[in-house]
Length: 154
Image (cartoon, rainbow, N blue to C red):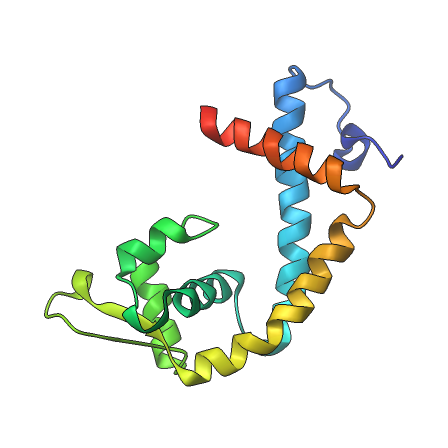
């Protein structure tokens, strides 16, 4: 077993309770996982949020999605989805069209965007396997369920 969270954080004071410790543990773990994905995407000049948007658009197919629809599907909340989409458009990774109102624009992944993220499927999957390889499937299912319970009650 590794160092305790208190040791990792170099905290000299006890946590305010198990809820506080659980919150900090989830945050610390999420930050570690997020950083590792960021390192994998860095050579592709792609942020994690940009990667997430491109995956969402790829899944939407030719129908595309509005900015609001994309925002509701994001793993991490994006407060300025329009700016993120404009950056992807400037980079040639996404395109918009269809309506007069900016809020009603339909966004689609471009061929260039697809060419960028399709080859990333396997390295990202390999990273996730590496990150969780020490946990059994039963433990992973338990973790998924526990985290779902927290989200359901929040």
